[in-house]
Image 1 (cartoon, one colour):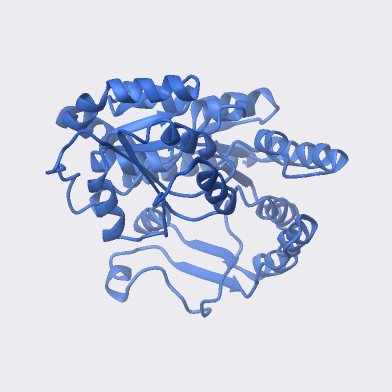
Image 2: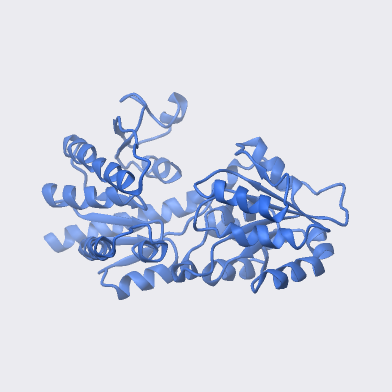
Length: 376
């Protein structure tokens, strides 16, 4: 909502179409907050519950959402630009249909590396359907008047695949929401406290993290906080390895910061066998860095480059024993690590959501001006 807030502050009218169980008069901001907003906000929600336990059932349910989204969008006020946010692929389809029917310029915001992830993840189990889906995504991307990527690497790939105009608006974090930076652990000892907090899905490759913890039990305490589709498999793997007290249910707000304070280092992980993750930066990295956590990155490409550029910790690679050996040799350095205030200030300046939202607003405003100039 940080981007929406900034758009409204810049006197932009924003209409949002999305599934919701909230009432139609719902507003994301309090009455007092609304007094400072110049633009009008409209929420056009529709009741939709995702059903289906099988793969095919989930796919049908996802695209069934389009049947609700399209009519709701057609009844909403006609915008100057239609922005669709992906990874929700049905949103991409709905946006394409609506832009054609209402003759509105389409802006496609790619928050993940689609369609590459579609091919690498194997989420579409039928090859003919996968190829069809990839072509459809690329067709919509190439037909959009503007495509927004979150990393320069993905922007380059999108341009190579035929997207006409591509710009970059990075992920970031609302750093002003953090009440303080990381508190120093008082009881530093010989055991290294390692934390992963976030989604437990297919993308993170957390099986390797469990393997590392299993060969490091004499000196490492691992906690994995969160939930996700991979949790049952991870719990089974941990039991096979003899790991106990690893998994913790999801926490919110103050509980998140308490776990960050507990940890000596926080993991940012992406599996290394998906090529698109070379130009993917997990959004969790921005929160961890902004809070002042030491980051251990099991990542490649642009994510690893960010960790190095802003001296956020270290990136490690190699086999399980090699990573374990590296961490074991760095225990003292990790526990004594403290973020550099100058580097922290630069990082927060570059990736603050409010600043990114202003950049996004300027980008969209200039794009619309060029479109109108071309029509004249």
